[in-house]
Image (cartoon, rainbow, N blue to C red; front, side):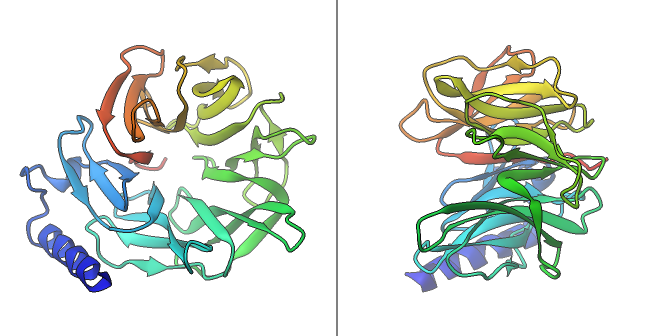
Length: 291
């Protein structure tokens, strides 16, 4: 079975290298939305064309600033270990960067200059105490360093080099927070009893999209980076997660469980024109060039 998977992966990579197109003759340059779907896939804004880069338990794709690479996570050791990997946009050069056993490394994000990757690490100790940590490393996996002042997850680099993340704050569930890349000068933008996750910065660095369950189900919100002008975008009985911004900052793509399998939906940032993009997809990442 593993041999078949490896052969399938090789054939996909060879096809992409040879033609730079998918089966529908759509140039791969138009496939700017990466997502998880029993592996890593790419699609276009219409959801009409898809390319599979990997097969297996891979997810949380994050684009490099030049659009040539993706950072992702993958399972190892029977799903007991999650590790950060990088892969080229054409499916080549699959490289493992973190190797710590029995830790869950996830949600990678590239620095604006493409030289660093920040990621979340989670694990339980022998007493079942839960530890959510944030780490940073060079893009080749060297110099892995914990940002010890930060306790939380979902880190995302901002255009100015700071990090937005969901933090544990005052013994509450989690809050949307900002810190310097060395973990200093923490600012908490939200402060309530809800779970608030998945913060993503807009391309212009002025707004943050995130997930909150403050009204029951998980919904998509946006807020200014100074904590003002908070707005709820989705409103339904299902759970909506993991927003990602369009390059022009006018739309979001997000994951929703409103179908039998999680699918991807898109919406304007004023809450209008919500529509389905694809079925059976999760953890989307929309490429936009770094500022």
